[in-house]
Image (cartoon, rainbow, N blue to C red; front, side, top):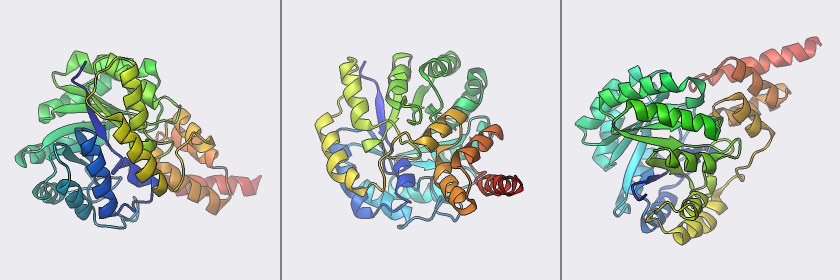
Length: 336
């Protein structure tokens, strides 16, 4: 099996974990090493995608277009991708990133809202970019509905569609169900993007590959929102041990993870109480920093906030609910 396309999202998903503080110099170093390791696809943008630098999502220390420029300069044979979230990004940002030199756009929507992505797939194609669908929070709908949404993206021009485990809530059984549903429906590539809230990011990625996914994501040292992503160096080692062929140079990844990424990490991704609760309740990983701040401000248990957000089926873009929930819990605490 040699057709697996690995995507590294350290410089996008990992941005959440360092408060969007990546510098152009750091981006250049990471992309240089990833290209040397033969990683075919490298994602660079604000953690929330193009134009994600906002008061709600968190401001970037450096203009993301400067980060993309730094990546493009040293990409070698690798391709540079950016994430785009309708409602956060606008079409002019796609044009600007394309003019700088990105090769692909990954268009991310909530898993039941593919219909809002059509104009952005059309713009990506107009700009001669590879176009990939990102169905976020894929645990929160049925495999059949997920396949229907993925089919819409195929009809809009997607080259592939990713099952995105935004909350780290999927387990191998539910990964298999979703991969099979998409395989039965699509004629394009299927991808998997895992988070590690239940400790299954690497295992779920291997399961996805075994059942037909050919687009797989990871990050160096697992740097990412919540409990982090599938650690890319661990994923590649596990792929080799599973006799899944890959041209990626493991030693180069390990060195980059240890020598470049580790020193920049504000904290080590691990499965603490809040991260486990997020995976178990199915709450979007990017909420966690906001949850912790709200819990401290209103003196309530962060797990209680997460559990309530899970009951409300909160999705990306509803970060304002975090404050509402924390205030309500605080009021109840005082009343008791």
